[in-house]
Image (tube, rainbow, N blue to C red; front, side):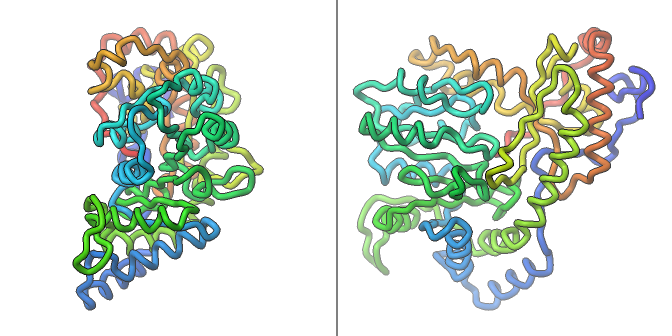
Length: 410
């Protein structure tokens, strides 16, 4: 462990981790089961187009969620886009700015105007009262996001949408396996969209799924993900290629079989982080409701500079040098990213809670590639940096900026 600031890697000392710890390093599952599935797939030469693994994966997801309809798609961004089109969303849709930019892009790409709302500073989720203030005659929907897998204000948003005659849907990219009021996420709004990107605790390499309790909507979504085909050579409507491949579904099935094991690892790591950082001044580890199901795939820390004696960005720079590739989710907020920040309608947007969180939040490594001992060392590094915060911050001003992180993964 470090004895002085000169021991820190950012000042020339050896890094604490020879192999970097990443946020969202993929969980693999049982390799032999996956390879057996790939072998069977190659033997039958059915690689895509609603193959048996895709249908099996959809059925497995439906059982997990309690019977709702699931439509597997190539990725969650396409899933959000075809849901928006299937539900007839036009004009403006309200969503939080504190989310991965794909949430906004999925609306903007087909010509829907994202209207960015602020969030609750404690839950990090869409503030229903703020959202209601943004409703205009052009508003057709509300898109909630279950950030970190913690359900947003589902009941309040449901009532708001009902009262104002709006369509409600959810980006559940973080929330597979999580619950609200004892019901699994995937059973709320008109539809919810999951991400099974490789960085998710359950993944299909690239992929996603749409969950809905509306059978007619499910049937339409299945057509729309396959160019609008309603039969062998019959196209019923405008569609796109959003199909999940058989190889992706094979990985999804293999990953889903390790669900309990991975959640157990995530929860244990989260508890060690809470124990190691819970009493550190200026740090708040985001907790999960013990009465609800959670996947614990994100370890989120808020850094309050004045109390901690060090800024989030200074801590981030020091950790990266040590091989702890912590992430600044969701920095700097969608409203401050292109193309939005350059468009006239967004230039006057002021979202103080979103800006505050974007400057405070740090996500730490977890998952099956991170051991309990790794977590303990990360906690010790963070406490060491915080204890030397003022001096460390001064010395970091003369250091070349931290390496540019790899593109966001969501």
